[in-house]
Image (cartoon, rainbow, N blue to C red; front, side):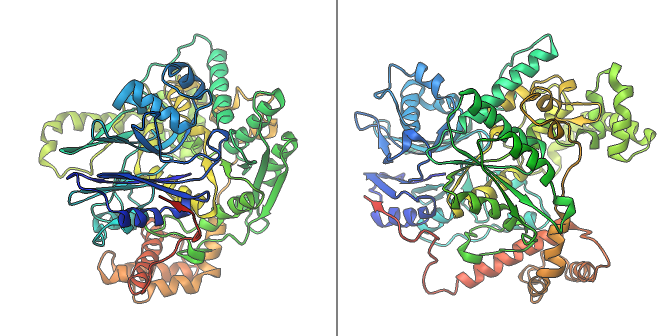
Length: 631
């Protein structure tokens, strides 16, 4: 969770120092260990230091290769260091290179194709003065953010939107089409667009190549396109999954500070904590770990303490903290409370629930946090709720699986079969029949990340959930929260190698006999407590959210409805929305149109804060106002 930024003058004129200083000021919240600026002619690079791994401790970026070319600013943690060290032995100048030095060596060996050889979380800017060429890339899942904007003959890039905006000569107008989408919780545009016109996100799995005469965007990686091992026996699949899962956890334990692990008591987060304990007790990893679990007395639907305690008893090396969290209700710490960065609209009303364990970990000296986020997307969280998944079931098992589909989907047998077979067939026939006329119809927002051919509905569902804008928005919200407090998220389920293997799994290993994530449960026998390993119940946080909306923060909701900017612009129907909220606050109706109602709160709050900031005489200062910036 470092920060990177850069400015390129496409006309070859020298980059202005004042612009780089403005860019650096927008990255200071990501630079707890200082900010450094380098420039040469038409290019300037900025790096905000946040040291978490032994190799980067004390590192000063931007950094160059031994001959002074090229120069690199990277926010990166590489997880295939051993593989890269072997492949790049002849080009490395150090026996213990930093991850940034590995990226430089990868560029020296593979040129513009270097990003596809990197496994981990990264965003980097690389300037090759000899070729007058800038290469920017972002990791396949999009864990590390990177934004850019072209203003005349100037290209501005940075980890945060705030930094890009500060470096612009003219304020960027809001992107109304994206804001309208966010009002109804549509996130298609979020993959590569921001709340400001002209300011874009580099999509996951993409790189940007910049020369004096072109700025080109290309995709360098596609999940599920690489061949994967095929085994004859189920036990071999499970053993291989266990191997790469443990390796994904081990790689993310590399830290110079204690590693915090968020444990809800659910299957995903518990598996990571217990896998870490297994690695430590076997000597396969060396780290100091701590567990953090939110517990609830007034919100029974969210309470998972009995499972989290099982994990704590298993993880004897990790002190466990159980954090009372009933006061993390919806709209608690909403908006710009305590200087929280709100360059773009909030995407949830439950930020306080994320910040509670993150702050506790930071207070204990943790700079790294592991979480089970991504497990549902990779392994498939709700196959039995989705009738079309019945097509993935082997004919010999279908009689055993149908009762579980009926129970979770709440459909009759007739309706289940129609939804599973007839409706998809009719849809495919309609698309085939009318496909030649599609170009005459209004196009949907472009799909930057189309999938490769995948062998099952479950694999295609996982791919969509990992590559759509909703997940991009969630990861960005997590990154914002982490950088605000001063920690770095690491999510083992989003390991590139793990995702590719799971997308190629036989579907009998994804779900079986009413159990989801069978491929995770089966290999962790002896590692995960049995009570957790075979758990089938799921937690929910609706009670906690509604305590804020209906009770604790009712005046805030009513204030946002009064003289609303959103309603004044005509983006939502006034009478309908106000009536919905009145009925909800009176306890007469649930959130009947959740997308509109929650989307309204998030966007209305952001618009009011933006309007308030525009009247300030001095610019806002980020949380870490005192930082070291060296030129």
